[in-house]
Image (cartoon, rainbow, N blue to C red; front, side):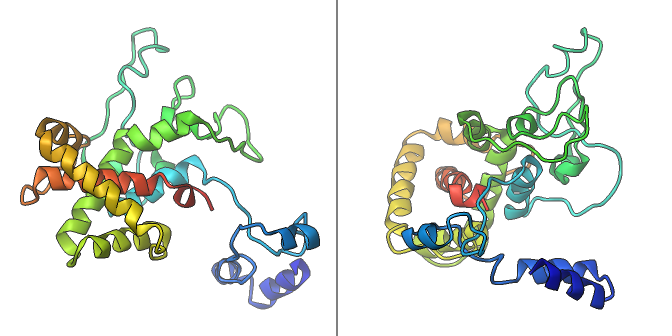
Length: 260
C-alpha cells in the first residue's frame, strides 16, 4: 500500500492536497476502531488494516474542535499571539510579581490554538494537561495520556462551557422541531452521525432533569450563562438555554467526540 501511495503521489504531480484527500477518504482510513474476536484472531497487530486506529486528539485539536462545532472559531489567519482564557494569576506565580497575564477580548479569544501565546515557565494549563509539548526541546512524538484532569478541563474550562452554550443557543435559535430533532442535530454536528435508538432516551431523560433543576434555580442558570465573553440571546428563556448548554457539554465530553 505504501509503495502504491508513493507512486500515486509522484504521478499526481506531487499534489499534497490530493494526497491527503485520498488518504482520509479511503476505506482503510475510515474504518471503525472496534475490535472483534475475529479481528483479534486474524489480525491481532492490525497489520492487515482490519480496523482503524484509536487515539485521543491532541490538545490544540480538542480546543479547536469545540470552537468550530459551536461556530465561534475565528477564520482569521496570521498575526501576533493571542491570550485566551487562563486561570487567574497564572504568570504572577513564576514571574516574580513583575508580569501579569492580560486576557484578550473579542475575536482573539476564539482564534485557532496555533496562535495562543506560550510562556514556557507557565504554559497554558488546558494545553499542558492534554500533553502539549513544553517547547523547550523538539518533540518528535507526543505522549498521549488519559487522566481525570482532562475531563475537568473539558467539563469546566470557560472556553468549553462557552462553546457548549453557543452550540445550544445556535441549536435552539435555528433548528425547528421537537427535542429529538434538536438532539439529533447536535449529534450530527459533533459525532457526524444521528443518535442510535438506545441513546436518545438517555439524553431526553438528562434534558428533563436539567430543565427541572434550572427551572427551580434561576441563580444557577444565570451563573452558567455568564461564563465566557460572548453574550447570550436574550430572546431565549434562561432555564431552557442553561439546560441545553449542559446537554451540549455532555455531548462534547463523549469519548467518541474526543477520540479518533
